[in-house]
Length: 423
Image (cartoon, rainbow, N blue to C red):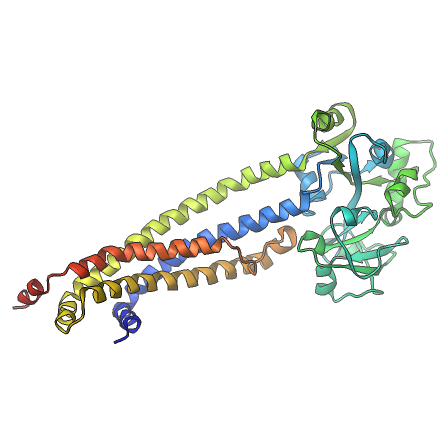
């Protein structure tokens, strides 16, 4: 008789016990898989989002909020800063700054953020145009690939933006529509879910707010920030007014001067300088405790699953002693029984792992849609990690280890003693 068929029939003799062990195994493995998938995708998202940014200049507030807003695009801005305060950092001849990228945010379209920036943003973030062209005039827009796909938008279409970052702000629509001029190639990052315009588009849509801020800073000045299109950093540097949300900086070198650069800004200016690497590290510390807790729970369940498989197979062995003795009399060798018990243990593990993979990826995909994890952190249940193989191998080893003792007992069974006990 086929060994695999016989092993399966043996497991099905006690279906409730078999189901309990498989579920325990699958829950333990699915916890490990979930933690792995979330942590890996989250770290990739943070890494890709911040790998080119050494410092963020923004208005005073929460440093972590600034990173979440200007790097991960999931929080509200800490405020706006006048471009006049940023002129020294926009200087192309600055001895420390290699690149400075302006960001304006605060508007949205159907929960997709609209980012005001300049041409320099796209090569800085390694984004390429896939269809159409980049913005040229005010109220031109460039879409991330996911926005275009999800909203069925194409070059030439018009969209009406909202003043705010959520759908609830849809009542506060801007009067002027945005015209789609281009669609970016997919980058596999959160940028695929963004809409880009030039800086002066933001100023035009918030004309009254810009004018009010300029009058507070320079009461006797005339606001001419709306008089020309701002597509590049040079255009921004030549402007005489306006405000933006943040300035993303990349240094030419890493030395003592760049290390003290942010501290000097925080101590001597009205701006806030934020190091994204430090804030992301703190964020990992916050989320790390939860991951460790789930890892411990998964480990405990794994140990329980191991003992459950051992007990299940040992009880099966005790119940089938006579049957195995008869099989031995029918010329089934010791190794045959040993392999049979090992296959039963591995079957439990394989089925448990398959169910765990379905649970982990399925539940993460559902959670991603329900909690908007895909939109905020680029986390999806459709993502597969190479390290999942380690968990699969670990599950198989647990099955093999759990089956080893009952298999050895079956191998060493004294058939004469068993047969004599029948009398």
